[in-house]
Amino acid sequence: MTKEAKNEGIKVLKTVVLSADKGDSGQYLLEEISDYIDEYEEIFVVGVTNVGKSTLINQIIKQISGRGSVITTSRFPGTTLDKIEIPLTEKTRVIDTPGIIHDSQMAHFIDSKDFKYLLPNKEVKAGTLQLSKGQAIFLAGLGWIDFLNKSKISVTAYFENNIELHRGKIENAEKLFSSQAGRLLKPTVLKEYRELEKKEIKLKANQDFAIAGLGWFTFHDSAPICFHLPKGLAFSVRQAEI
Image 1 (cartoon, helix red, strand yellow):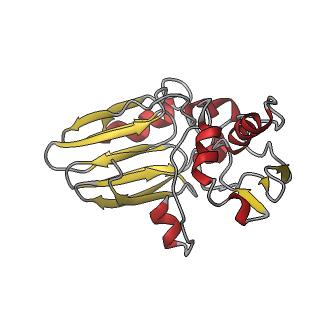
Image 2 (cartoon, rainbow, N blue to C red; image 1 turned 90 degrees about the horizontal axis):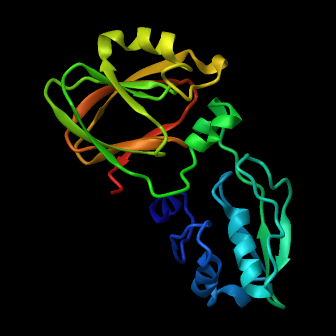
């Protein structure tokens, strides 16, 4: 987060990693920002949809006032429809803002009943895969990746624990996806996004291939891949984060 913010020209004072689901996160965050609170009249809470902004603010309110939840929270994007102002001190108020919607994230390509597959509510269990020549990995029914390596390689997958990664052969991949998306391969993308984009790129050792709003693969060996994902879905290649 610090690196990406700096790349966008944002001055970063501090980066704090926490979970909105943890009961003590509100108190922890208050302690971390205590040096800055009365310097500003307004503190804005900003982020993409479904990262837990309102949940976190409810924890802060509870820490300060002892009251329960006063801001509506939901798994569905766009629950906060307008900014909400909450007094923090006599000088400062916290402003909860509507979530920023990125239509290039996976949430916009699936039915809302399947959001649970995108939003981990407990620690993700990474899985390391040994891939031989000619293998493909299906990301449930959301798309698939052909691994074009000529020898065995190793990758580690970081996805929500309920997302099933199916292994198959490249030569059968298109036929299998066409016949099993929504059946064996679940969840799947909405019907209007079933025509997948195909693109070939090369990954180096210790790089991540990240799919927006879904998860990522860490490559321990260099290898070319060909991915088949919904058109308009964002992806990135970056230095391995873990």
